[in-house]
Image (cartoon, rainbow, N blue to C red; front, side, top):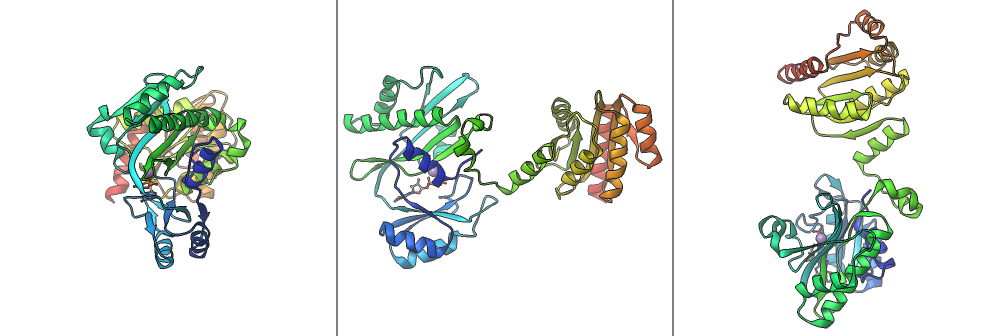
Length: 381
Ligand code: GDP
Ligand code: MN
């Protein structure tokens, strides 16, 4: 689960990391009030769950009331990489001398958390990572011992020559580690960590991704969830006992079992197709689930064909088939449907489908090939 910048900054301040101390608002009037309270100049910042806001025009400096008004009204409602801006953070503006990057994330390759530090932070950090990765120091962290003082100091001295500044940067790194470990983050990032004109250090941006698997330990953090449009669908699916992840392909997949669902996506990809989603309808054979799953797939406008892949173990093929027939009738399905059905009671299942005019195969590969074929027929028609 991702947090927005204003939420991440409030977490940062719990751990002592210096942040500007702004206000989140949801309207132009709110922005004007906040600016008055904070004092000009301020920075008006789009709050969306994506980076690159600065480059998209979602971060603006305002020195007058008029500028606050015009920036706030321009940024509210703006679309940044597919995310509509509904909230703004109004922060006191600061004079930046230098922008650094400090982040902690899980490194799967090394199998441990890593601290990443660069003297070249700011909006171009992706380019630094791509073109000059040697300018980012990577410090592996022992997950039990945690980030050690000497590690933080060593990293800090790589970006600050001056002892006083290096020490305060090291302190921020240790605080960031406490936040990362204490909140069970999978990412905690400050970009930029700014050295201000007066020599202080402040976190001007904040990014936190929480590990969903540990959220049960943090009910207060779980409450911070701001569902995004794409997540809403996944949440609704979860409420119905379905496990759904939307993707951007055209082959809607409905599968029983997470492993088979992964294998189905792999096979579709392997054959040159693009899955529209991951969808695991689980092991039970409740016809309502099939109907819910079908409705979920049909709510994705990108879906051009539905590929159902069911292996009946505990799930009985005849139950799946009757659910399917009901779902096709109820949803008035007008997309091509390809079914692969095998396992317990498969003959009964297939004959139920045949009666309803739905063709089924027992081979997964054949099913996937048919799905690709139907999708391309649909596309050219
Ligand atoms: P991002 O583009 O989504 O990463 O948004 P950031 O919060 O990192 O802001 C982008 C850039 O805006 C930063 O790298 C800074 O250069 C600039 N910026 C952010 N806050 C301030 C501020 O208080 N004063 C000044 N002068 N610039 C700021
Ligand atoms: Mn940033």
